[in-house]
Length: 171
Image (cartoon, rainbow, N blue to C red; front, side, top):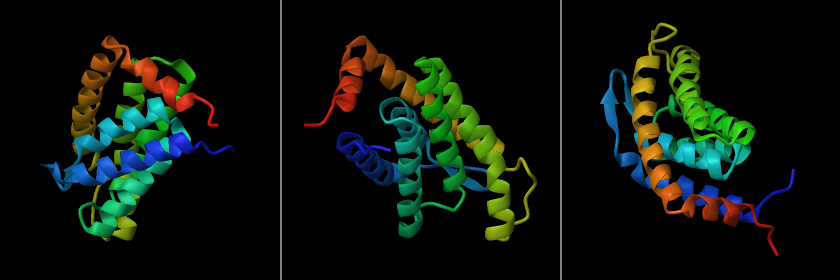
């Protein structure tokens, strides 16, 4: 796999944004939901692809956990969502499928994958789909924010310019 300095730099900036804006959380049920992370996942899926997007989500979750501003539940939710979001955009180049990848990846799959993390690592009693409603609420909010931002970027033609900038060959 070839590494792209531009994509790595963009991923680093998205990690920084995700960590800095992680203070904006919404308590839903037993977890804290971070809609900004889902907005960033959608942007990473479109601009960076599934590999860099998943790595960005992992780094953001790791730093938030090390700082004490996140929980272990952030790993499965954000990483699966970013990966599916990137795969959906890479295969279809359609924003609607990209949004669906984020919502399904984080809300359903990520929420379900939180069960083993909560039970076996955190020692909490939980049913299999305990975290799905909270994750769905969070990802729907963040995905709507991303859709609004991307609509503005597309209308101003900045979306294509940004994609072209990240895909350009390095010197």
